[in-house]
Image (cartoon, rainbow, N blue to C red; front, top):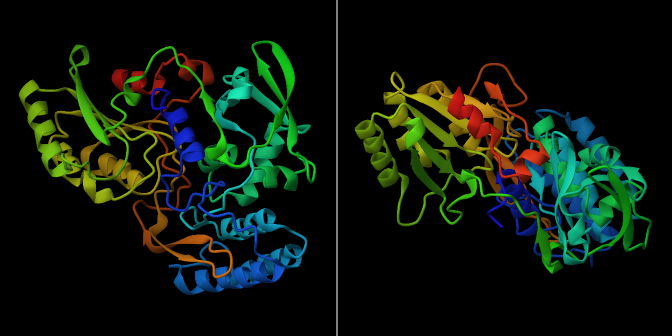
Length: 414
């Protein structure tokens, strides 16, 4: 799975195998929550709103209390007509309405189309599918159930714990394959277990009837094959690792997660890397944060400090993408502010100033888990919607499927 390219790896990790962001819920939770009746869901709705009001650091930072209560009343009126999965979606809609991407509801396992999608610059592409639909892998997705994919992605935005374009590009393809959401958006009829999916390969379009699967874990997946494995996807079992690119006099560091690696903590790893940089008189260092959804920002501090001390003689480049979030975002900001790094890649789904430091509680009747923020991080002036790269490099399907890495190439040339 890891030999796919970071964007593809990210999606497959999130959609197929669980979620690195705490509380990310696209039908990958541990329960089904289908046994709760309307009264139970109303009780959970009350518990959700009251729990967030008392526990969140600043629940009304984006929506007023009156707006949130009006949204709650709207959802309460609809709950009597909705089954378990639809009711859970409604609660997710309320949580998304708060406007804090860290605050989210972990959805129960849900029926879904057995497709994994990625939103490239040139459209939405199927990057994995059930074995029965292996011939769809690599094709561009045009519509589901007669609804254009762009319309479905827009419709999914009300349910997403995302507050910028990068976040929606990351999250919407994961939600839009969920059967309950497709029903809500009119792309799957009530009671239907198949959808008409239109795809395009080259210049040819075709329609395929795709049956829903019970959940992601019940699917035997066929994943896209790349022409070669990019550097970023090598050594998949390592949380972080580095290599020397002798022809560029560059040290490349892959940093997949803001966590300590067992047997090689950063307090040991960073000094060794810095000694090598000094010994070789390295000209450039590239820190690859792509796909890093966070953890503990302090883990990287020994390396940040060491690079900052060498900023006068090092060209430091940091690779970022839409999946950089939370602590990884803080590390990118620190590397820019303290060590003079130039950022290369895509805008991030995380905002530079954001709520975070998560805790959670469970809803009393369904048992669904709610994650909420307990701290506000103020890192830059103003309130930018995203951390923007100094050098923007988009992601096109043909480049990634060929195993190319335009962002790394840009970092090596700037």
